[in-house]
Image (cartoon, helix red, strand yellow):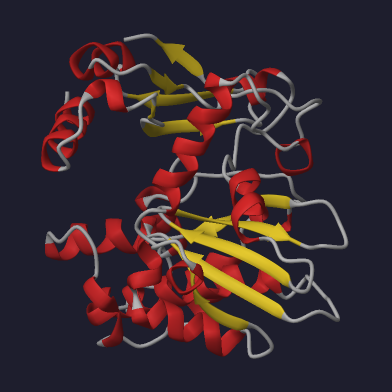
Length: 299
């Protein structure tokens, strides 16, 4: 219902009619993503039959499972879009999305595009501040700035087998959650809540930087950040400090507002599906072949 109501409100605000829109690309909300289990599966909530019916617009959804059906991770979905928009033959460009999970698209003109999840983005910081202060997120990293970095906790957080895995790889809240964090905190009873928040911010920044430091190039290196984490000044400061040889900025500075990158990507994925064009990248997900992602729900 919420998706349909939001779309209809958008149409009304912008004086558009349903027939003006070819299709809606709607990912839904991932509640579980397990590509490496004995029986790989992924689950997103949201009834796209309702969205199509209540908006009167053909809706494309269920983007991940086709890639998993041909042996892929089903994630990340957007590197092909990033390549189409941001690639440049004269530089190594990495697009970093800091959402609940951090993921990257590596656009190297000298090698195939790769993309994968690199670790927790905002999810642990958001969950921790909600548990302790009842807030949905730490605006501008203000609470984290009141805390002190706990190096022992940071080392424990970084000691996670996911970081040693070679790509393609993906992760989610099924790993990085408050239960996982509680286990990491078991022997650190003196760590104050604000210190944990500061350390979680550093954990996100260092897990990103550690991954990018693997990429060597004689070309100029550009990191384009998008997603909610790009609005956190503390995160951006720490990522920049940890990557002194990179130009670190946001996608907004290169023509695509940080708030619209993911929306534009799913519009592109919907376009590809409507025209039966491939939209995954086997070099990214590990799929056996390129396929057109998504299920079509006619209006």
